[in-house]
Image 1: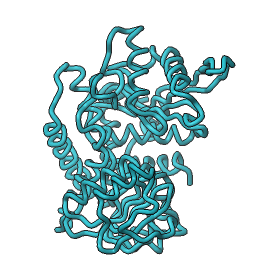
Image 2 (image 1 turned 30 degrees about the vertical axis):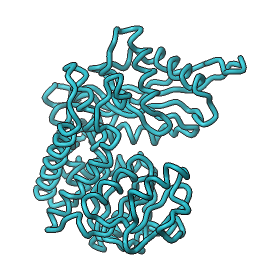
Image 3 (image 1 turned 180 degrees about the horizontal axis):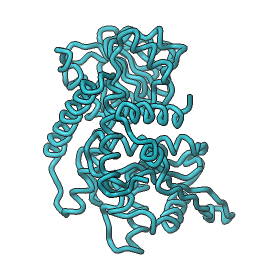
Image 4 (image 1 turned 135 degrees about the horizontal axis):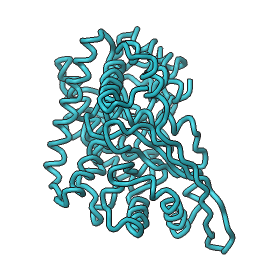
Length: 411
């Protein structure tokens, strides 16, 4: 089942639990607007090349739409649609005043020079500047984009609308980016894990963790879990997978990854098959890489008691059922990885106020939001007698449905 089918399925199950009217259910699924633009740029050698840029704006009942912009050669419209919809529910679960969006350009950033990427970003911004905005749609970095990409969008947008730092989040600190944004998703994963473990009478200290994916989210989660006394026993990335049953030395591993561009060959560990990382013996498994990695093929072999979904859509619905029957507790992506968008909201707030916060305030506010979010999800679980995934979906869908009805938008 692809990401869109799985997201639609979860939405429909939540709508049924909430007893939503079928017209309202249908209108909540349909995207507000889908934008497709041609972006033609001169390459460094003088030849012209065209790319397709797009933006799916899913829902704005609760506030401006929010979501990443990705540069990737295979941008699947269904996946982008699913991710835009997921952002609608995720922002509602986090209780921040946004709706969902997602977009990008079908290109391979690795094959483009810095100046070509800049030209492409600026042309894309020229095409969509009327359709994004501080109170309309606020993009952020995603796969293949970074703070520099956001800086170019901000500059190009400002040529049309005056200096507007709040039009994008995930910016460089020097242009109004927020302190703590880099670590936000990983830190949110830690806070969400703490909330879940506390609910089960446990703490992070002494638990054995396996982390699949060692990019921004995985590496920050590993570092913060290590600092909180958790034992990270195995990690993997695109270069390979490593294990140490007594716990990896995370500070040394982070240095190794910086120098060697991957976890492969790290001294204080044994190399293991990257495909077996998900089935390693541990208490808590954190998939922090791609979607669809936990399927019916490997779900029976997973030995973790808890799964924290740091990646988007890592667990297939079939795997979900198998794991639930086994008694594995899954903390769903729309709650577990909402730290990033929550701190993006803080960045937007700081830009609008023209008043920046110190990092301690950012982290304290994030902890407060994640803690309250977990309580809200648990309340929905108790009300509807459902698991955490449905608890989060019913919470998000209910908030968006209520806003839609209050604004008089229901069909």
